[in-house]
Length: 634
Image (cartoon, rainbow, N blue to C red; front, side, top):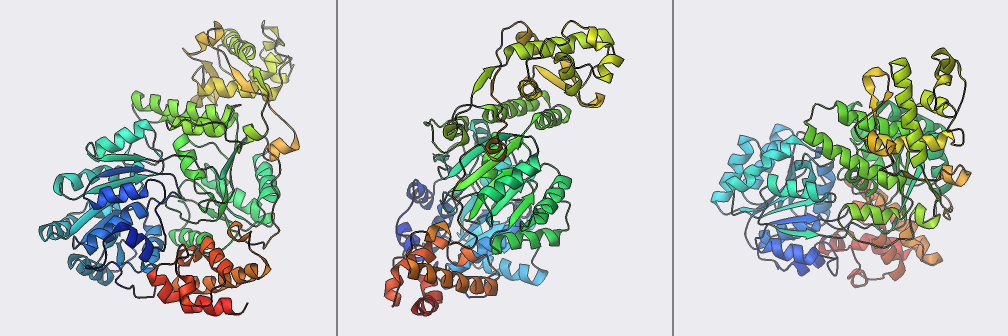
């Protein structure tokens, strides 16, 4: 936690008006979007389900009601958070703002735990963060009972609420037990929050958390500052390296890979190319994972190469890109992960490469899972939606938002809008591929993989083709006009839509399904993007962005004059020292946008600092004089 003792800005008797709290504690002059409606509803004791994109300000939607209700004498608010590792920074940020906050997790020793529990039971803590596993323990529930009996249990905030749903991309069984909160404390308001939930997941959250009577607040899912680019996988690591070197040299970013080994290999490759890259996956020692996460949050220009074990709750504002070297399981996962870029509102990239093997792997994982057929069907549908997004020739953003039920118009900020691709009708190629698979099976009695089937169709007399006599079947050579790249695109769609299956137990060979019939009969069409093999497409398929020189100021400071830039850089250096002293990420002290506003105003007195966004009462008192000292040098 921060070494500074928090001022009692959340003490009973202070103004409980949300607008006053927003200004005094957090230093903002006005709410954004639906924040005020949500806050007013929860302060008044109403239950809420909040869907708001990453970077939209979800945390204020429960932090301000918690402070307001504490000031009104209602006691402690409990925040259910799934990640122990990030509670430290969340609580530290509240301390910096002058709010009495604490966490209970396994990083505390017994004496520290008892101290937090005593302060909680005395009603001295405004926001208490705890993992769902702890919340569900008899000890913790009995403590909540005590608070409730004395009228000191104010609010429950359930963060990352999609974790409660089996249809969500990050299901956690321990979240299911949170129904106890409604059953045991029916009079205590609850607010469940998530950045990602389609209609099915949303309905499951409502049912599992018993939020049928809760008011739902659904914000736009659009992140207009993020540019979406999806490219066909050729040499994935080379494509990634080219993308980073051309577009994001020296920038902070996250690269997602499906396997731990791939994470390690890619991190080594990037480091060898001079990029400050670190690996992160569940197989690493916990202390090393924490060290790498801390470096990513506290240093500039770090690229984290990770499995999906990394990222939930990451609040770093200046992540300039998120890359996917392997296709995620569904659109929710893709949206959640790409949403970690550009939280500061400045331009950012979501870049993904995918190929036939990605589709095969994801389809196989679904088919081989021990889940019931209903669950598998839902997961197949989600995979189909993601593949549809990847193969789309129209606006990516329209497709992405449409998945969440939001209508939009072409964005002008995705690869398809910037460089509209050509499309071609792959129906004939699909029928010829399926016919070849059928005839090979008839002749040989066994199945074969994609490469062999394509060789037959394109008329290539390989040793394997000759060995099995497949040059004699009627479809040999009838697809010579199709390239291997085109045929792989057709196979991706056929596998993803279930018109073709991959037999994992038979060395990933291809076999027909019930869904093959419609394609063979000409009842289903297959339309695909034209594959582009130009260097631009391989590296990202879009015009090259102007890349600032290494060491250039952040986007927030781009408009400052020469003296303003000097003040900004000096303030950043001072902020880094304070952050290290408090063991917190720099953005917890002040965001770049706040430093830029200070630099532009060139303050000479504490009064000059008042009203700058991000400077609340506590921060003005704690840091105002030092900020003036730094600025006075210019």
